[in-house]
Image (cartoon, rainbow over all chains, first blue to last red):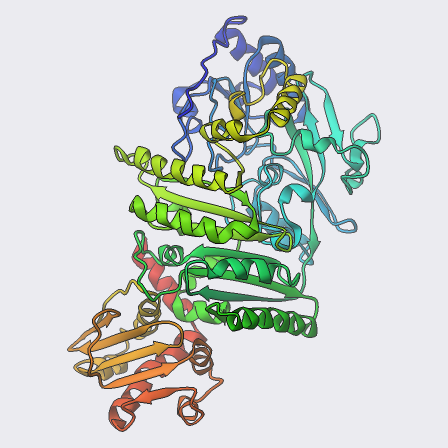
Length: 493
Length: 140
């Protein structure tokens, strides 16, 4: 694995002076250096190397963040943004120590929901559960899009790291649905990007309605894993919530038949979301932690969600989707389509956790360790990916757990082999990491691009990426963060 | 008391879910106890599932199935859902060839199968929450 670059952050200033300065910015109760407080921030569910931070601070407003960034930039102290630590990639492990900025505790306000222009302006700590509840209670006619993640996962983190949610078959990456950002850059400037860029003072909450048409500076902060600045506000698009909804279950027999369901159903443009999982995952949901797949069982289960504004609209969409599956069966695929609401009642209501998002999914949370190769994948390679990754899982005697999504009407896909393991059992992390490395090499060779990448993965990527891209990447990083204070170590910086 | 084995295949999990719904109901216990029959349920495109009633035990098999069983029932998943949600009468289903039964001449067995399975399916379909929370209790 990648070795951690140690840096002595107290070359220029003593730890006591750092503490005093942090307490003067955030107030004594919002700063800690106690080992017992720091420890939970030093690791995550993955096998990424743990590393202790030096301080945790809990900010309440932008002006505190401006002061913090100026202070850290002057003294070359790392800053790591943190919301709920729920990512699966070691993204908030402070690889070079420094200060963790925990947005989840106090900078977690929904600042504005604009009914007319359909967006929500959020502080970084807002969670999916919080947003879902707020919309349900105050704007029941609007909806956001939710991932296969627990309610305590952060909305802004998901958006700026290009997560994928349950409208992704229509919308694609959540990064595409950001209207505006407010960012604190290394020089301590507050920069507003998007239609909120007018004005010298604070932006009107009603001005966060579009990302374009000015030069798109948002790309300087999206997918950078906090390496270029601190995001302090984010406006995300909302959508009308249709009154009619139906979810189908498609079970596919034959290891790779699910790939054509993802591609063909996705391009019908009638589906909000298609998520597919190995059949083993369905069993994990009903408390079979180490499931066996029997020879004649289906290989994958896919959920296909459609929504509509009237019953007639829904019927038309149903007809299109059912005919698409029928055509695939006529071509020799082996797919059974059923109403998932009905099926789940007979099978087990536990599978409803995949429908009623956001939700804590037993299959993702029941083990102390969780790791994956989460990637954007070329849709035409899905069959090959499934076959090769399934073989690797079997070789390592690990239950096959593949999660896939069709993105933006099938323009691309999500391909995510997942592993749960006992983090604190000796030898387990190494065993699972060996399997994950093999999967990573195979998937990257087939063109997959991992997201929310741990550093050992970006090290592999760097060997494959064209030098022009890497050169530009380094230039941008050096230009925006010359002292490498923002989440240093990510992408091997 | 009826002991229903926990299955680890998809159809077995479903049948376990359906039968468990009534496992504490006196009428159901009387029906199932010492029935001592073997049935095979086959859902189109899936695989045959053998359900064995033996004393107060209910067990499942999907490998090495018995050649001679008392009833063999075949239908599609759609038909199963139609019956569970009351859109299709199972007897009418047989006349429409949507439900195929081998061993239909064993009238008492067939009737008991309907009282055990179809009634339970309909109850679960109508009020699945009971099972859901019961499962939760067991895992706390």
